[in-house]
Length: 197
Image (tube, rainbow, N blue to C red; front, top):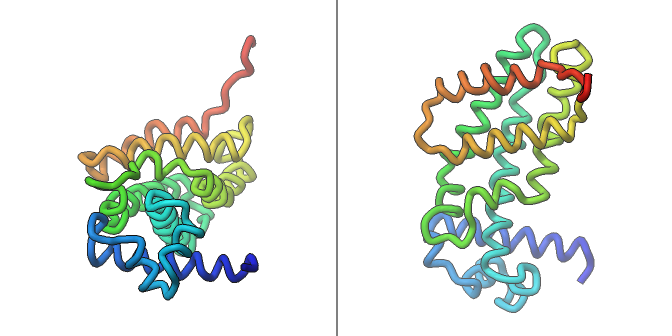
């Protein structure tokens, strides 16, 4: 199987699995059924995805990437209200990931995948850096954000903080905004003195 054919088969299987999981629920979908809907055998499903857990994790990643892509398409780095826009985008992403019905089902009760695990796959860590890079670059070039740490460091830190907020189900949006404004934005704008000085 060529690389492009494998990618096409993987996409068909993933689309079929996500559709079935949305309509039937995580406990009712079998790998045989996924293969049938995808137009391939159960063996092919297992050839592409080692097991059910790997398929579910791929479905979670796929949905998170869709949410990130939608948010990135809607968000442009503003000129005048950088901090306010950064906070608003942060809250939008957190709320979208926390409240998405498909994600809730995929990493909810009865799933072998936890939300914490799903948020920390290498693919999503890389996507977080891509997502925040234009904002970090703009903020640095205009003197709005600290420049003593790399984009990777800042994106990893944002990912850590925002994953923690996503996992808290009882936090109101205004409290999220306040936390991001008081702690996240403060730490992103505050350059630290070198160690030992």
